[in-house]
Image 1 (cartoon, rainbow, N blue to C red):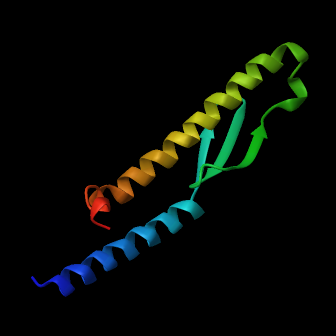
Image 2 (image 1 turned 60 degrees about the vertical axis):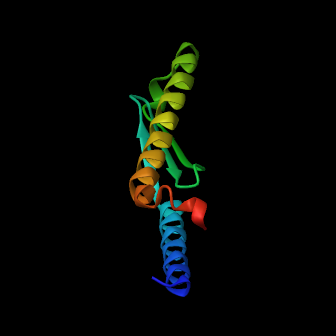
Length: 98
């Protein structure tokens, strides 16, 4: 394989990686706990926070609610990481070449 063909292939792979990354950034990931739902985008930015059953919360429940937000947020973050790893894993090791 000549050098030009290798460079074309590397540019094509880089283009594919960038396309996947743009798709991931647009994807929404949802994390849930019993009282909270969090939606993130692929850039790990929180897009939405939903607190369920607000009417029945009292001030003593706020500590629990705060913990639930953390649980839901972390679950959504893990989903972003898993999806990114799955979609970009075939390019691992090639990034250093570009």
